Each structure stands twice: as structure tokens, then as C-alpha cells.
Image (tube, rainbow, N blue to C red; front, side, top):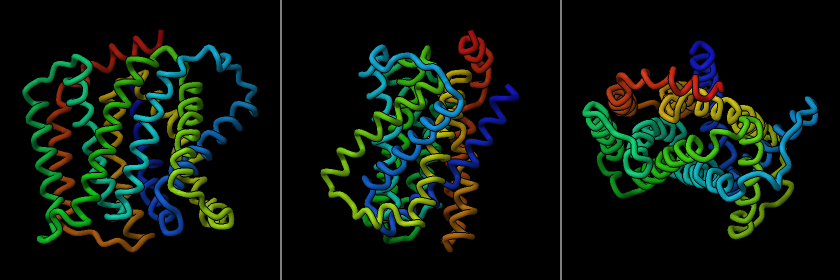
Length: 302
């Protein structure tokens, strides 16, 4: 459990910066271009690690391609497209706050599609979490239905995708080594996002590979997707989908900090209150769920 919690904190630090990097890239690139760069640099990082460490992996043809593609779409391509599109409407700080509803979506998806039974406190926590979303949707007084609400809706869709993806990972890829799972899902995601980029229009090479964008892609893709997904899948396999989703407690704190001090984003009291409401819902829904962790950990360590 010590390793699990240390990994959880490290992942929160890394993913807290991802919202900032997305905001920087969106200044010159579109959402599909951001997702392609993120997945490409992430996959490239893992390939470099595999070559440097001479890691042996099973042949590509022996992998469950359909399942890996489905996980890649649910866990990477779709949520990252929605996050990038959402950050064209709202600040990176607010995006990270809405993303904090991921544990609640994970519980509901488990109940609806993966035969997970929810306790009363989990239903109460989910209701409180959604109250936090509605509170944030109209904190400006006249923004409901406008750009702010659209951004929140897109970010909620991303959190929903994460909930689906984490359960799919646990059910269909529990026996796949963490490194292979990370590398191949990012590779599938890179191909899928490249197709999306073809549809929306290819960027100019001088813009895509400009020094600021390459630096942001290294932070967002190589570190935030390549290395971070090794940690994420470790949390899912050795812990549980619900435990891995708890990273959203930590990421908003770092995202708000970087957004304020590096991007100059305003921090409103209503945003912090909304974050508090969401965190309250997530906390209430997670009470006693830690009892599952030792069992899940033993299963994953076999």
C-alpha cells in the first residue's frame, strides 16, 4: 500500500501540470493536433525506454487488438479530445476541477455496466458531486448555456470516458503487463488521433514542431502520458479502478497552482467552493472502499 500511495501522489503531481500544457498548446494548435502530439510523444518515450532497457515483449500479433483499441479510445483519445476542446472554453484550473468527478463517474459506470453494487453513501456522494458541477456551471450568473457551461459539459464527458476506460482496463487487460499495456494503448491512440487530425486538417510543421510546442509535448506526452500511464495502469492493476481514480483529488490542486502562477488565471472563491463540494462527494462515496484494496493488490501481484 505504501508504493500505491506514493505512486498516486506522483501521478497527481504529473497530471496536475497536464492541464497547463494543454492550455499552452491550444494557443497555436487544435484539439485533435494536441491529442496526436500527446499520444505520439508518449508512445515514443515508452519505445525509447524499451530499447534502452532491452525489454522483451510479446509479439504484436498475439495481443488482443480489439480490446486494446477499445481501451485506447475510452481512456486516451476520446477524453483527451474532450479535455482539449473543453479548455478552449474554460480555464485549465476549472477543467481540472471538473475532472475531479472521475471517481464518481467510475462508480456509476461500474454500477450500470460492470455489475458493481453501490452502497448508500456512494449514491449520496455521487449526488453531492453532481451538485458541485451544477454549482460551477453558473457561478458567473449569466454563463449557463454559454461557453462556460459548454466547457464544463465537455469536461464531464471526459471524466465519464475515464470511468469507462478504467473498468475496461481492469476487466479486459488485467493480465497484460503494465508496460505493454501502456505502450500499445498509446500506439493505438496515436494512430486514431492521427486520423482525427486528418479530418480536422493537418497543422503546419513549423508550428507543430516549434520549440515551445515541442517542450509542451514533452511535458504533456513523454512525461504526462508515457511515464504517467505506467503509473496509472500500475494503480489500476495492483489497486483498483476506484483507487486509481483518486488521483483526481491531487491533480486539481497542482493544476490550480500552475494555472495561477504560470498562466495568470484567476482563482475565484466560487471555484474553490465548487471543488470543495466535489471533493466532499468523492470522499463520501469512497468511505470504506479501501477495504477492497488489499484483495485487489493480492490479485494483481500473482
